[in-house]
Length: 254
Image (cartoon, rainbow, N blue to C red; front, side, top):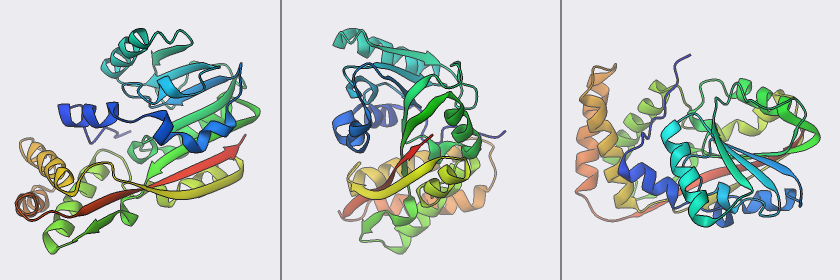
């Protein structure tokens, strides 16, 4: 199965992930937590959200990247959070017994998965009957950018192409609720929330950097990516603007 992590683990990507907190990113999930529960954070990255989840519960962060898990463990030690642990594992093969988890949480993972239905089936397996699911997934098709010039559009098309080449879906938020229902979850509720994840100019530089990095390799669709990179170059040298990302937050029941 073709699957990668399109943003990569460069300084800008790790800094962006590390700035995320549970207070901001997991507010919709907080009513699901209760003392004594076991909560799993799938795709935890550097663990900045995990640390703030369910402070009176056991929390396990899971990520397939060993480097991110090491960062998360170091952050937990600094915070003195003894009820949080982290492990390296695949979203498709979790090392947990069936029916053992009370709440499964995930932020900014499912847009990068090549087989989201398989990951949802695995989460459903490890959740106890009546256990709860809370997912937050981006939908670039509803992102708000002003001004959205021809160069911005062209650069973003290249960005979306890189996401798809890595096995993901840049518009995953559009279908995540339906996928939860298809995987057998019930009481599926979704809502859209907009956040300014980065500035308009920061997004331009972020997209330009990823397109330039892709062109240094031997990947596919080089002509399209080169054209998108030229548009991104123009975008980064243009004026300021506004950017907010659409995050689709879903809760459901096992």
